[in-house]
Amino acid sequence: MSSITGMLRGSHFRPPRAERTHTGHPENCGSLVRMSSQQFRTSGRSSKRPLQGRDAGAGTGFLFCLATIASAVGLAATYYFFVRTTAGQFIDESALVEATVLGGTAGRASTEFLDMLPMLSLAIAAIMVLFVTVARRRWTAAGIAVAACIAANAATQILKLLIPDRPDRGVQTLELNSLPSGHTTLAASAAAAVFLMVSPRWRPLAGFLGSTFAVATGVSTLINQWHRPADVVAAFLVVAAVMLPAGWLILRTGNSWNVWKGYGEHWAASRLWVWLTVAALVIAGLVAAYSLLQVPDLSTDSTIDYFWAGTAFIVIAGYLSALGGTWLFGLAARKG
Image 1 (cartoon, one colour):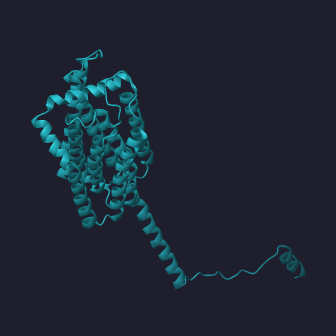
Image 2: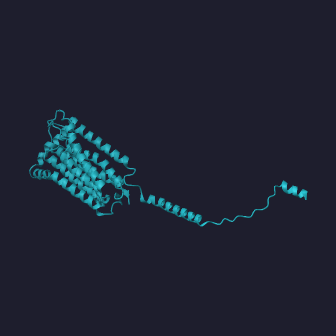
Image 3: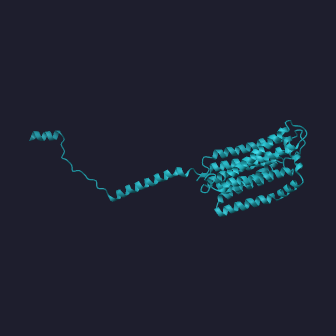
């Protein structure tokens, strides 16, 4: 017996323990159920997130910044070539002088249009912005758009004061600086404010109609010999440089309504408006090229070709701004 007892002690024998049966408590089961349901809901949200797409304006800040810088650089280049160089002064001034050819009925009509322009621009912008603001409750967007519109017109007036008079380059011209055009800035900024306030599906139409209104204003100032073509082009660039950052802010603060479902979702979102803009650009480009080819060498005598070339420059600047804006804002809007 003693040997058996020693063997048991040497082998560290322990009596078998009764197996424990884990009976689940009700509260533990509830926790597991809640955890499982919470994980399911979380996974459901994460799976839907890619379908909803990114927020409006997200990831496009660099493009808007680049477009704004390009507008500012274009403004500086326009000023330098058409004001500081002999060739630029001659082309710009010749277009202004030859505008007398379209006097008479066209001149009187454009004068009446320009006389009504300030009130017309303010009325269009005020009615559209007020309607969209009240109907859609886009108070933040309205504040940004109106502030940008005021800033663009203020920038034009400040530039007129700061830019020195035209230097003498041997071209017979008025020395007083007239760049940028105030009338064109007013019309273009009003059209841009409406463009920023409307829903993305309305922007293709708003871009085409707004640019047409602004281009008509710019051409009218040329016909009436109020401004040279470079003054009008500079006005478009001023408006673009101010309105682009404002538009990006509107996208970022208006994510709920800045939803773009693609072309064709609405008649205002038809590709027709884009193609009409492209057609106007192509025609204007051909007119500018043909007109300038008629005068390959600068001379002391101006011709009507300079007027048509200057008009084409205005059309190109206006519709190119609309085309670029429609593309950029369509890209930046939240996809529906």
